[in-house]
Image (cartoon, rainbow, N blue to C red; front, side):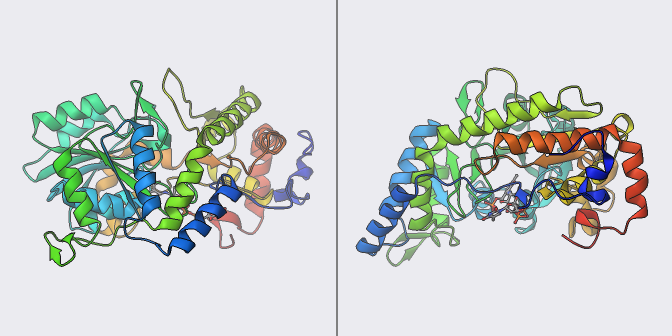
Length: 411
Ligand code: T4K
């Protein structure tokens, strides 16, 4: 256990790491193994492995019920899900989207030669800043894509007003938001369509996978065709399509994960509360909050580091944590507009994105989920408190050491 008064205890300064094994952000939650294995045996016995099999159909049915949405189409991953939703909604030209997101949101547009028009985010919610959206509408704009970052809903009503006023489509990247609600209704029902990710690193996973949800019958029909090469019958192709199908093993995992979803959320919530208790009143350190009457999945524990107050920078804190084998992540540094190909294509985008750049330089995501226990969280918090308590001294000593961790050349 770290002694908060003894600087030399920190592994970054020569002490032994707090954890022998690495603690990761995004360690998968696994439901009941016996149930999963039984499903896989059943699948093998039936020799039906993919292409709208029994488990996919059952999974879509259960997801629609859980979300209270008319149509749920499962897909092989959320990136392909976004691409299909974008194409099926008829987006072209320009789409207004935050840069402060995982790069897949933006790639899904650029992949189809649609220009992502980067919109800044709100400093409190970290979601697309509705006050900025309207300024970015041009005659080429065909849609708005919000991202429910950290599982906290965008201001969907205000976005919908802008979309209606300018005759735009409204899509949501809901990759983080499975199990979260907006005004008491499950996310999955907003805009023209929403896309969830069930990637292994999400609290609810199907290994790889995702789902597109909509209450629009025509859009759902197009999405179904497009995810299966455009096939409307054995030899009849009616649309440009792709292969976006979820396989049966993933659907079996999804059905099994769904049976444990309450347990996963409970553990995430109590981990989050523990971090919150342990890190209250640490100067310059704030946890992203999940307040109000909504449901949240609490899958992201996000710290905001105010360097001026904490006396230690975000990157130095990450370096200290990595040395302890706490593989904290800098989601979503540096912001998509500062990644290729966007930084070359839109070199001046940053001028309009001050909040995005500020957040990208301050946030840290910490390990949570079923793979982390409460004692480990307390120890992670002790490391953070120690780093802040001795911030300037740590900073001075780190500057004298060769670079390592996420900012250097070793990982
Ligand atoms: N939109 C948004 C807003 C998203 O956040 C994402 C994905 C998408 C769209 C696209 O969804 P998908 O097409 O992936 O369905 C990870 C995930 O790969 C990505 O799905 C996720 N967002 C993003 C936030 O995080 P990386 O590059 O950080 O992943 P990686 O490989 O570094 O994994 C993170 C940590 O998880 C590792 O340190 C170790 C641990 N891990 C990972 C895997 C895969 C495990 O312990 N076991 C595992 O099986 O992107």
